[in-house]
Length: 220
Ligand code: AP5
Image (cartoon, rainbow, N blue to C red; front, side, top):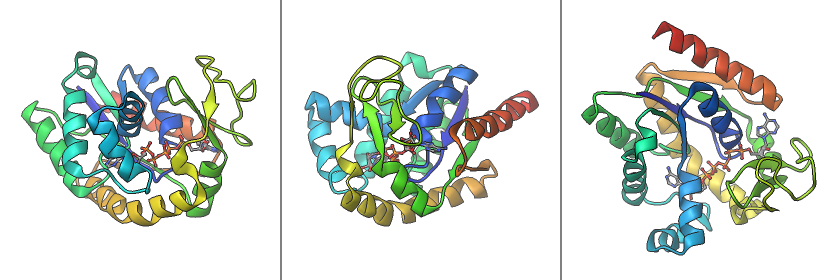
């Protein structure tokens, strides 16, 4: 069971790269942000609670997030291995993941880290549009869809996330970067961190990520 943790600040390109990597490596893409947005849309108790934090740019509390993630890991399609996107976001989440994987006799194989300077993150989030059906991300200037307002992959409508407003983006970066840096340290200490320069065109970042991950897979 191969477990990859794709790391990056808000807007670094995790949601752009994770589905490509997952498909290429035969793994399941699991994004906690997508799981929360689906719960918000469905109006579940989890979604109602998560929304209050997401709207303010804050992290959803660890207990709720870890429980949701562990339920997702128990589903059959996760058993072949996963690309985790947006999880873990705190040191406590990283420890909970390690413990859950240890019970299954596995561990995080690699933590590719898409590194992007903060000023670039702002412009990426300000111009982002995502699709209603599956959250496929686009950018009005850097990565536009073929037909404006329509997802290339599934034809659904594109919309702007409420947490991509400039004031919420500022809050997301201010509140979420300190715990995120703890997570980076966690994987640096465990020897699996793989930094990748994310301030380049999407295809180059994909190439860099895949060449490292394919080489690591061959090494076993
Ligand atoms: P989540 O959905 O995970 O948001 P995020 O981490 O803030 O990440 P984003 O989705 O904003 O960015 P991304 O890195 O996926 O970038 P993307 O590929 O779209 O979480 C949302 C909220 O849910 C959180 O704020 C929190 O409240 C809650 N939450 C989620 N997980 C949680 C957890 N574990 N614990 C607690 N709370 C949690 O790219 C961005 C834009 O840039 C796009 O327009 C894209 O087209 C463009 N782009 C991408 N790559 C490039 C490139 N190389 N060059 C040019 N443009 C690019």
